[in-house]
Image (tube, rainbow, N blue to C red):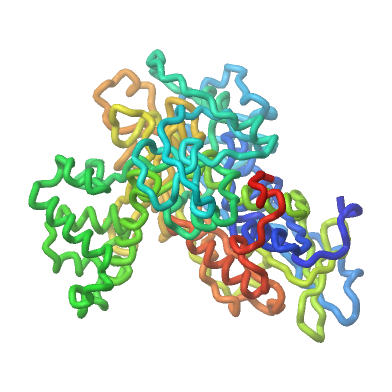
Length: 618
């Protein structure tokens, strides 16, 4: 591979996370020669999605990675007298405190394997009675692949003639400015030949299946390719920066989306649905008529709060929670606005930040459905790959499993001039973008990282049962103790192409105060119960049962000042990993800042190719 790589590029990007992939696509589309490398065997870094066995392989790879010892560098002989080297790390230390639990029946006598997977190793998971997660036996690596798609059939659509502001809903174009309540699915079909063979929509079988009393670990393994499990759990605001970027850059044609169907609240030990649209508010049986009028009046004010400064003047220095107490809102409405609309906590947001969050929520309503949020089919990991695909289409060169040993810096100018890869090849470039996790401990010695607590659960039913089993939900569980943080819960059904039929994939996320399990297990215990054989026949069980659970902490490298990195050359730019926020605005803002430093046009402003001007997809 190294012998076939050109020796010079305009931009070298190390890491295939979302920010790096957006920048690589923009640089390639604007005519620059781009080399995009990643030492991992998959795209996305900590933004990636995995099948079930792929996730187990990732866990094994991470464990083996922690045992890597840095050998004496063989590239030192290539460093000249007027140069110095900045060694890059071979260890990924962004994931910590991994714990895995299996509650489903482990019928290991059955010889069951995931279709297309390598030989499995069931010793990965800890049994339900164990108190510690297994960390020694995992599935071997497998090539990442997509599940067969089971989609709902298309329903009515509204056409649009403006290609600059369009996402396709159910396969037809719908303007981003027009309200559409006919369905919750937003699709942008891929034109890649490979994807067309793997992601062909199939009408979902709506006939009732025989009731299954138990889901075993063998079933999860066998249907492992039906799972697409995100390392980071996020949603897209329908009028957010990333949706705008996807539309204007035409990258949206590489992905498919589904609208979040409901927003939930957790009060007094119960989960209930929160009304979002005007119609939902007036049809709600949870609110009195007086509360409905109060809520609509307050939300109308929030939409244009800047026009009425007297309404919040003098409250800027207090929290949004305290400000809500001064308004004519009942405690019930205060709770809904704070946790389910502004999606903040009692202490996290100021009055202005809370009003902005509420306005953003309301502004995004109705663009593609009844809630403000979209979710990419097959998981968040599809998004970096979409931008990588565009980069490759315009000539970018990609190398996975290709590590970079060091950056070569000129002593006089203090600029980076080249990299030396794992094969000892020196590759010259003008600009270098490096994902934070590739820097050594020495370079990051002054950086103070935050942590994200994550949990991934496979459950047998929804947290709020309704007539439809294809609900996509978001729920915020407020913090109960000082020093802890609110927990965001996103529940995905099988129509999102992230889990097998008859199960739900649940993501829990919060800012870390302890280990992920210590932070999140109290919330898990409130909403779910472990899956045990004794409870299978018990029809009175109301909570969903956990079949499988994963806890881990992830590094949050967002919003770190460049000056915190030791001796960073002026032409080396740092891309952060995922942050703890719900949306992707932080990543998009980061890419726009870096594009200005690179003096490169932003991706949505790049000229269209000849084929695109003819209306043809690449």
